[in-house]
Length: 124
Image (cartoon, rainbow, N blue to C red; front, side):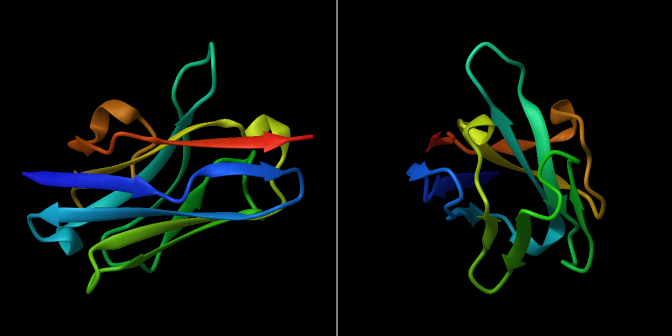
């Protein structure tokens, strides 16, 4: 069993930055790949990016590539989503999720555990 807790969301102006954290408790965090997803009002949950279990490979949706960076610190059992050059269309609830495996999946049903989500609002 793994519990995930996201933090770091908030209100920011367009062009600004936020860093989301995903703190894990429970089983060995380093055994999991981590994914970040987001869900905007009226839209389906969408893959934002992910990092593999060893932390040496990251993957991003085209919409965030070059602006967002995912990292992990297994000693702290925490993953991060650094978001720069934020746009109003980045407004959503952001979720972290983990799957027991070495690779990242883009489908949300591949993930084993989810956090509760954190709201990110980008004003124009």
